[in-house]
Length: 352
Image (cartoon, rainbow, N blue to C red; front, side):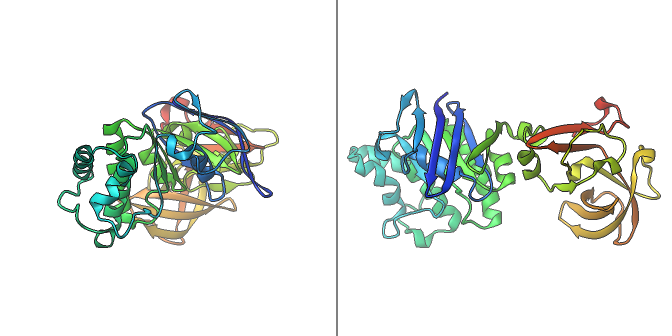
C-alpha cells in the first residue's frame, strides 16, 4: 500500500473526529472519502497532509511513517475547496509559486508552468488574474498549482463544492482523465454520492469518525456491509415491517428494510406485471419530472416508496392505482445488513 493509516485517533475537545481509523490505498488510485458532514473525512485528509496531528496511530506514505514530518516535507499537493489562489498573482505566478519556494531553476519553472497551463486547457490565459477567470478555470489553476512541484500524493478537499452544477459535472470528467493520465495517487473529500461514484476508483465511507466500508463504487453501492452504508446511498425508503411485501425471507430481530427506486417495478393496471401475485397495490401521491425519468412517490401498505419510470413508459397520474413489485430489499439488524431478493423470482433472472 502506498498510503496507510493505522489505528488513527483524533479528538477535538469532546468530539471524536477519528475513531481507530485503518485503511490502505494503492499507488496511482483515485480515492473518494465520502460521508455526511462531521463524519471525519476532512480531518483524515488534513492529518495525511500534515495540517493536523493524530493523537495516536501511524500515517505511512511510501513505506515511511510521516507523523513527525512537517507538511512542507511530505511531497503532497493540496487543493482547497475555495481555490485559495493568490488574487494579486497571475495564473502563471500562482502555478509557479511552489516551484519558486523550492528555488527551482527559472528555465525549469517556465517549462513546467507552461506545460501545466496547456494540461489544464488555459493556454493564452497565463497573464490573467483569478478575478478574471470563471470558477471552473480558477479550480483548474488550483489543481495545476498543486501539481507543479510533482507531488507523489494529491489531496483535494471538496474540490467542486464552490462551482455551479453544470461546470461541476464537466470538471468531474476532466479531473478523472487528468489523474489517470498523470498516474498520481489522489484522495478527494466529498459528501456528494454521485460525485464519488462517478470519479473514484475506490470509495471510503466515513461515519462518526469510523470507517464504515471501503471498496469500488459498484461494490459499495450494490453490496453494502453496514446498515449506515445501505441507507446512505440512493433514495432510500425505510420500511418498519417488510413482511407486508411478499415474498421475502424472514430475518429474526430485523430493525427495518431499505428499498431503493431501482428495486421496484411499477406498472399501470392495464400493463402486464409478470409477478402480479406478489405485487402490492399502491396509490401514486406525487409525480416529478426529472429530465431523464419520472420520479414517483407511491403509498404502498402504509409506507411511502420512491420509484422511477422511464420517459418511454406511459405516464401515471397523482391518485392513480398501480401495481408495485419489490425485487430486492436491504434488511438491517443492528449495524449488519442482509441483501434479500424476492423469492417470487429466480435469483439469476434479476440483475440490478
